[in-house]
Length: 523
Image 1 (cartoon, helix red, strand yellow):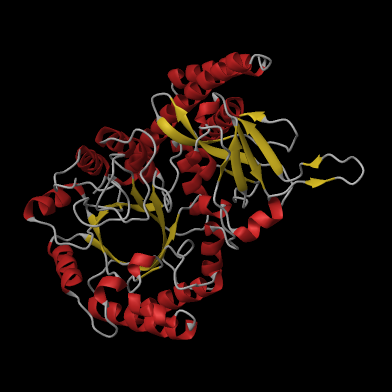
Image 2 (cartoon, helix red, strand yellow; image 1 turned 180 degrees about the vertical axis):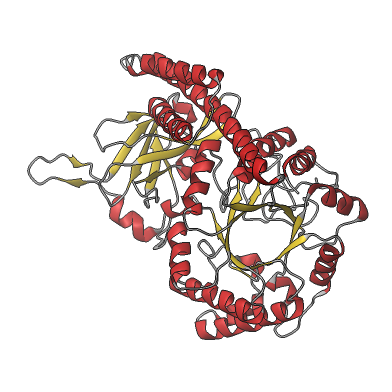
């Protein structure tokens, strides 16, 4: 930090309402309603990235739209509402890299909260609550986990009682946070092992899908062999931008090849998303109709009809629409996105009633809501579509970690478990599309909008993440499949270094771990 204040980008319409302090007419003191302040210690940890990624949530876990700024080790978050809140921000945890950690529920007050203390408090509370819940369900908790939880609580008590000594308090809080986080990792591993063991006791191996996205290029023989050893399912992209680059002229070569290859090797095949609401997935010629939604809807219907007619009977799951909650294309409103998504599902089910149809939502924690105005959090967006009576067969949750903008912030295994459980409450099978980076260097083949991931991401870190999180996902009864969302770094891609094959098409260590997961648990 160079001493200058750091201010996160936020829509102008919002900064006008929160960017100036108001004064009480009698007391002539700043009105701090809607503002929460946090002391970052050590102060050099207050970076531009932290300011951009920090946000507040309420009891419904939906993010408030905030204006974030930082100066002299103080992070300030302002909003139009005045209520208690949880703060979420990226924080380095020794041995685990940069992880998004949250506090407990905090009231508004003039004095800044000490972030290390509050993050330790929030993490310890979440750990103890989850431990209690899983014990009620019958989880057998090994003694080393209990010891680590007890140590985290002991050190936290020391931190909470030494707040007059900022450095000592922060050091104890950091130690407590690390112990609590490591206990959370151990607990999630124990949960995963016991949950999978119980499920396999009744029916042998799990029937879940473990798949990879095939991208837009054909795999060579070596990559194809590795793919078949690793996965039992595949996502064949049918990208509108590539298939119908010119209006009314279809190019099916890549899609035909991929779907035929999947059939030949008896891979469970997902096709789509048929309508992906992302700038690189929408044909350029559609911009001519940006202000005419009814025409856009008609073009979309025509494309969906062409795809489903061509491939019905060859697909195991249609991905009807993607990024329906975050896509910012063609000036579509949220109501128009709902209509477009609903029409896509209706048309797919009409043309191919025997094949399940799913929709894809991005960034399920909804971090994006903190920086732009949104009417529907993703969970409510999905619920609204389900309540319309559409025959939606499943939900796809897209989580591309550690990439900004457009990515999901890294979180603890316990937080991932809680998020999956929340979505599972909608009663539909879940398919998780995930990716994490293996490097933080410049990536010339990544799209220009992608920023480099923060933290110490390496091929080994990518492999460790998979070994820790993918089995946890598969352990959840509501999860029907897990897909790696980016296969090759050698072709143009969206997320830097997130592929399973490096820029020279050499397999990364992560592939061996995924193959081991399949051999250990899946049919």
